[in-house]
Structure formats: structure tokens, C-alpha cells
Amino acid sequence: MFRFLFKREHQVEQLIYGYLDNLKMVQENFLKAMNIYFERGFCEDFEFLIEQTHKLESKADDTRYEIETLMYAKALIPESRGDILGLLEAIDQIPGLFELILYMIQTQRLAVPDFLVTDIRELVSVSLQCCDLLVKEVEALFRKSEEIRSLVATIDNNESHCDHIERRIITRIFDSDLDPFQKLQLKEMVIQLGEISDQTDRVSRRVHIISVKRQV
Amino acid sequence: MTALLSGIFLGWSLGYHDAANVFGSAVSSRMLKFSTAALLASAFALIGAVLEGSAGIETLAGLTHLDLRLAVVCSLGAAITVTIMTTIGLPVSTSQAAVGAIIGIGFFNRQLNMAGIGKVIACWLGTPVGAAFIAVLVYRGLGALYNRLGVNLFQSDVLLRLCLITAGSYGAYALGANNVANVTAVFVGAGFLSSLSAALIGGLSISFGCLTFSRRVAATVTRKLVRLDAFSALVVVLAGAITMHAYTFVGVPVSASQAVVGAVLGVGIVKGINTVRRRTLVNILLGWFLTPAVACSLALVMNFAVHLHYVVAR
Image 1: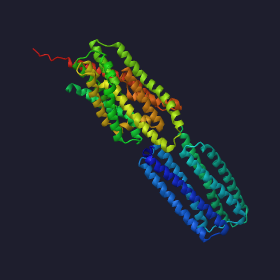
Image 2: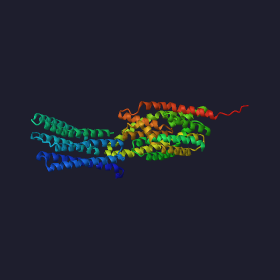
Image 3: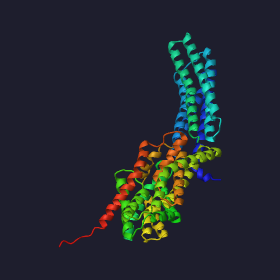
Image 4: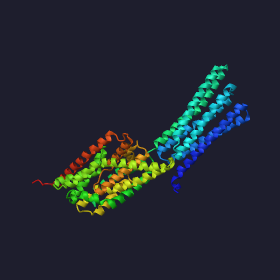
């Protein structure tokens, strides 16, 4: 009924939902790319998915810029502007990590030995679960839903689980007979994969603080 | 008409400084355009003065007997006090300056309505305390309502912005209604103006002051509010406005800035945080004693000066 009063705020809201949809798409592309890499190694499809991930990551940047511009044109009160801009900046590091990991595999021609594939797939899977939960948490923040607290706890558990998998993989890498150079390459990739859940956890806590701050 | 100039100057000064108390937080946080705030403050201060200003005018006019010359001395004394204290950065309340000057003249005339003065001083002391109490009630009541509404972040922001504009307009209305007496009551006491024309002229001068208030003044006056979130800022503006409006019914002009500081203190009590600097509280105490004392002394000196006669040497 009073939609005209909320015009700019409604635009920002729609753009943020669009941004989150885009984040889901980057995530799906990343998962597909990793699956193809583990199943077929370097191939055209893998290269295509890397390109798609890059395009979606750029689109995320553009959407974030659009949201920033709209908010500086006085949508929302200054306190909320700061919170949302900070939140988007923190979320934006996640698609950046997806892109970084794929480029790392592509440019360094990384070869993952068979004995690590299951563990790395598990790390990717749990990390992406964290991302799914984060998107739900951000949506809950904008809908004023009560489920934020439980989502923070689940993401925190998943992040601890990812840390555990990460340590296990790194131990197995250095216990193996692989070439020392390859060991370092793989360790670097595993650390970046672990960073996905770490960043998700940081953003999740930030969402929780924003939600607590707004309680009267 | 020239006799009214000091009153008009006092009214302009009042509007210039106190518009920041009602719209300062909204303007300095850029939630509201400066021009919109100035226009709303100006319009509502005038409406408040004309519709409800007469009670305060009658109280101040009844404090002592004045003729036109004494009324001008009172008004000028209060205006000069406000200007000097503002220039040297000391805390000042127009209400206290106006009453201080009236007391000075009443003291000189040996015609002081002690019951009336007692009522006014009790209200001064009660302003920050009352504002703090009202702020606690408003915070709890409005907070419960806000939480029950279940609005999301975006709706909440628009709602807070609209409420702040409404509360600011109400604050400007209360400012005009409550403080117009400081500007022109002495001229009613002198029989120079009727209550209605005093309210209209006083309201117009306050309204003009509101129009010329600057972003810089808004930022300076609301420096004490910057640590507050949007909801708390709304509570402060609303509690300050309710306090001033309540004293309008009692018929006593009170300080808008002291009402705001009291409200900030009230929000601090609810949230369990220290929202007001000790220096601000010391300034209020200082203002209670210093402003009427300076205005009273100035009025006495000026009255003495206007009674001097030139004696031709033989």
C-alpha cells in the first residue's frame, strides 16, 4: 500500500536478493567445475566453467557497485548503509575465493593425487554447505526471521569440521611421497579451500551482530 | 515597532539555536534534507506559538509589572545575555535569560510574583529530570510496539525516518508553543501587545530563526547525540518534544536543549550506557545559575543606565 515510500529501499532489497542469487550461481559453477576437474581433469568444459565463474564474479562486483551507488543516494539510514556495505564487502570475498581456486588449478596445472580426491571433495562439499547456510542467514536478516542464531551455530560447526578436514588433508599431503613442490602447491590450494568456510563464518557472525544491534 | 526589535532578535536567536534540538539528529545524520528540516521547523514553530503560546505568555507577563521601557530593557538584557554567552561558548537557555532579566527588573521595582517565580524555577529543575523519565517510558513503550511490528531492515529504516520527521515537527510545534513567551511576554506585561499578537510576532521571529539555522549548528548541538542509534535518536526527539509540550500546559517556558539532554540521559538509563558526557551535565548546572544571574545583572545595569539623567553644570 505504501510502496511509494519504500521505493529506493525496495530497489536496494531487490538488488541484494539478485546479488545473493548470483552468489548461488557462482557457487554452482564452482562445484560443477571442481567435479569435472576431479572426473575428467583439464578439459574444455572445465575451461568453460572457469570462464563462467569469472563472468559471474564480475557480475557480483557490478551489482555490489550498483547497490553502493543507490545507498549513497540516501536510501536507508546511515547506520544501516554502513552495515550493509560492510556486509556485502565481506560476502564479496567468497566468489573471489571460488575464482582464485579455479585459476590456481588452471594456471599451475595442479594435479590432485587419487588418495586426496575424496577428502578434498568432502572439504568442497562442507564449505559449499556453509555458503548455502550463509545465503539463508542473510535472507533471514532482511526478512527479520528468528532463525539467524541457529544458522550461526550450524555454520560455526561446519567451519570447525572444515578446519578438521583441512588439517587431515595437509597431514596426508606431507606424509606422502609426492614431490615437495607439488606438496606446497596442494597445501596452498587446500588452505584456500578452507578459507571459504572461514570467510563464511566471519560473515555469519557479522550478520548476527547486525541483527542483535537492531533489536530495541 | 522599534521597541519590538530586541524581542524579534531574541526570537530569531531562539529559533536559530533550538531548531537544531528538534531536527539536529535527523539533519546531521543526513536522514533528512537540511532545507526540508528548516521549513518544517519554521512552519510548526509558528503554528505552535499561535495555537498554544498564550499560557506561557501569561505566566511570564504576570511575574512583575512592566512599562514599555522596562519591557525593552528586559528583552534586550535577555537577548544580549544569549548572544554573549553563545559567542564565548557558555551554555545558555533563552528561557532562563528571559526570566533572569524579568527578575532583575522586578527586583528593581520591588514587585516580584514570588509564587510565579517559584513555579518557573521548579519547572527548570524538572525539565531534564522529566525528560529523562519520559524518555524511559517512550523507549519502553515504543520499543515494545516496534518489536511487535516485526518489520524488516528496509521497512524499519523508512519507518524510523518518517517517525523522526513527525517527532521533529511535533518538537518544533512544542518549541514554538513553549518558548514564544520568552520572546514577547514582556511586551504583553507592559500592555503593548495582546497575547495573540505577541504569540504571532514571537512565533514569526522564532520561525525566521528556524529557517536560518545551519547544518553546522545542527552538528554542534547534536554532538551529544552521535553515539545514539536511529531508534534512540527518535526517542530523544519525541521525549524532548513531549516534555516541552507538557510544560506548555503548565504555562512555563523551559529550555529545549536541557530537555534533549535529559532525554539522552533517559535513553542511557534504559540501555545501561553512559550517553551524556559529565561535562554536558556540569554545563546544565552552570546554565541554571549563570544564565539568569547574567541576564538579571545586565537588566539591572541597563535599567540603571536608562534612568540616568544628564545634569547641566551651572
